[in-house]
Length: 145
Image (cartoon, rainbow, N blue to C red; front, side, top):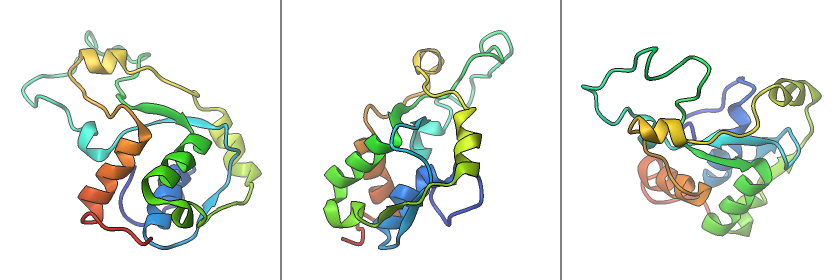
């Protein structure tokens, strides 16, 4: 999840539907609940050992090095509801955006993290964990209930 302000990136809503409601703001969900993506907290995106170098041999271009939790937008919202409550999750408004949907429909739907974990990357096991890390690391342990 990206901390900070919303941006115009087609993928920005994945973070915004969690970040904005926790800040007490409305967020727009422009795609259906079944759209999937793989997520990780910024803490888990750091390379585990700065002395270790990625090379074309240990990370072929056609394989993902992304360690993370694959889930649908609906599962993201359900995790937000579990972690922060119904009032926070109710700040998400579904407003379909065909332009954004066309973009994200062309992206891979799910990843496994086996290769990334073998390289030493670590990731959360659930999206709930990602939300809790965001609350602790970026919001000082507090959110707008």
